[in-house]
Image (cartoon, rainbow, N blue to C red; front, side, top):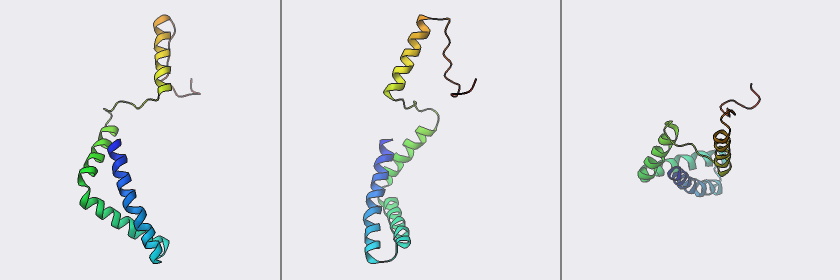
Length: 103
């Protein structure tokens, strides 16, 4: 995900000054957005292939189904508490596959 964030920041760093430039030139906001977007896309496509490929690989890995789930510290603590509860009391079943509010 770091590669995706890095590539997104590069694209934003290209887009923002171009948007300001075209807005300053008085082409109108809609055309300024279109022109800045097209030029930022072209520059990033031509000169930042390595970063684009790394971002693509990171996104492919994240959405492939093989990636580890991203868990917060609270979720890790909850899972550890549930595991401890089940180990101490084998007669208690924890079923957190169901959505809240369903039976």
